[in-house]
Length: 387
Image (tube, rainbow, N blue to C red; front, side):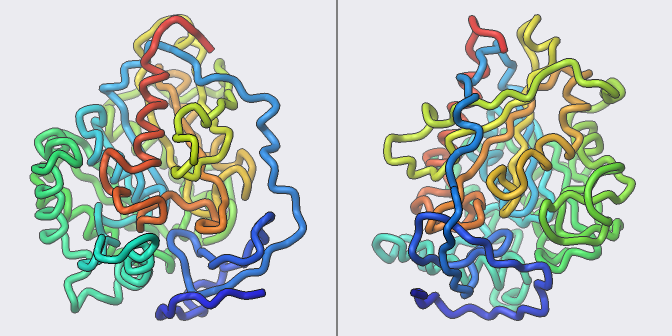
């Protein structure tokens, strides 16, 4: 049985790597590609969607982390979420890395909040795909940095996000690959301009746009060929993106580890969400804790948001263990948090919410996903329980 989906302008030749995924326990749903839903209906299949890591989960360790020195990064939908978390909790965030993503608030329709239920999210879909990925709506002012900066300032004035003055002090790294056909380079450049319009000094913004990368996270020794856009969305371009973005945000760092001293810990995400799990998070997330951070409090935290079809249900631990974050964290007293979104009927490819599928507050600090991840920071800040 197939459910009709909203009509969008979709050219399959622009997305040669799209493969419909089989999602268990749903009779029908709308398909999603990478960062937003498309008009592709996919039938459910007979697979086991259980949390394979649930039996080994532990509470998130209380490490006495220095959460007011937190940084965030993300690829694709995770890039949008990194920007949203940064804006919502700018008092805690000192820097952000936006990889193949656009400016904060890009997908919000001018008719947002005028329709009940899922109406707002549906209105946002077409704008997200056509305007904030493919850059096809520029003539109508979609993804206009100045307009989006003004809206962000209005949101801050209403207290829905932290003051813009806290964002202005941040350092922002942005990246677009020349082989990326999923999110247009112009969209990423608009994100850079958005930060400039907010008042972030140009010296605090770095835009990398000269590597032949596909739609993926880039490494210097792991993943697919550089120009590939496809699972696991990790590519080898002889460029250490994890190190580059962490050094841009934090300054000089100790050389990365060759052998890890710490541990990847599966932790239970359920205590951080409401009973109805409106955040649509997976039961289990992952945190990398260097040995030094179990011995002495005060480590910084980096939050790495995966992209669509890049959660553990889709690719296992590839992004978590091959992105390179742990190697830099290990020698620089940085805890790396890898929160996980679950596949669901509304979100079958496990994307972070940047168009409103969790509700109309998705851009604010009250957004279910943003609130849940912020509670994770609170838990890491607590003391009295090492890893």
